[in-house]
Image 1 (tube, rainbow, N blue to C red):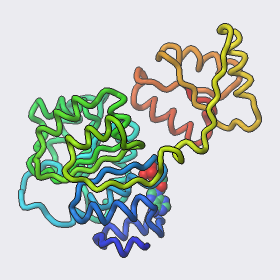
Image 2: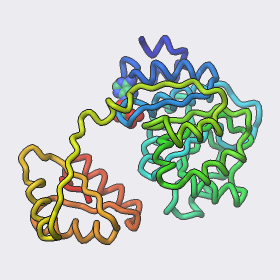
Image 3: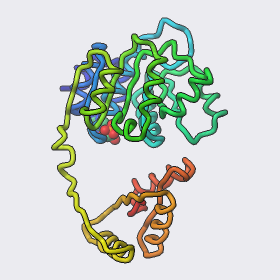
Image 4: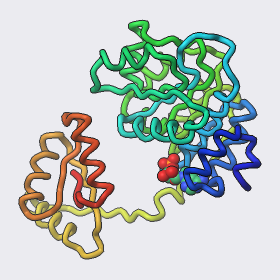
Length: 299
Ligand code: AMP
């Protein structure tokens, strides 16, 4: 299948070509026709499958037809669990929406309100947001949702894990029932299925990776340790293994992340901590270093 056969606006096809994509990924070739046909969709797709373009391309395609209302509010709302994902989705919207001049904004927690108020007062097409901060702005009457046509819940399972469900429900209550809703999640069972029932209307379901395939490349091991000294020695042993390129270590607290990162750094590992007490600038710099390989161990 080619992108040309997906009935997308020529300005979007141009941006796809400029991105260097030649063929749609599995989730894209399955999801895009369902979304452009106007259906609600629940899809299971992991990061790395091209899921962002799978919802962003048909969302942008909506923008190719002008809205009858002249107001300034967003026509597409993407809810994401984290600030980092908001940045990624916003960048994707800019990249694919370049030639249709999509106006996109990202609104996340931890950023100053005055700047966000200013961003939200300008005409907008796409709003990418984390649920808590978005709800704050909605409750202060800062967002005009009268033009909203599409809601996307990206990484819905993570939003659920992070306790955002009540916020998501409250946001949905304030959106037009006429909207189209898309839900992307690593899994579609259990709680996600229940939420989907509540928020989506007769959704089509797409599953590109089954539960079993999902972790096929991950080996899980459990190590019992006697005490901290033993644990630290074992960690050191794992970190110096020649096949280990990059490592992410999760700790129970932010403070512990800082302490462990400092210890590992002192022991000669290119280490950095990442947690919610750091400024967004520092978080972004750390992630860039991780991507570029300048950080080997992320705590
Ligand atoms: P995602 O799963 O949305 O995080 O996307 C993973 C990566 O795949 C991103 O870096 C995209 O730029 C890239 N990508 C998305 N769609 C395609 C495509 N059709 N062909 C090649 N790369 C793609």
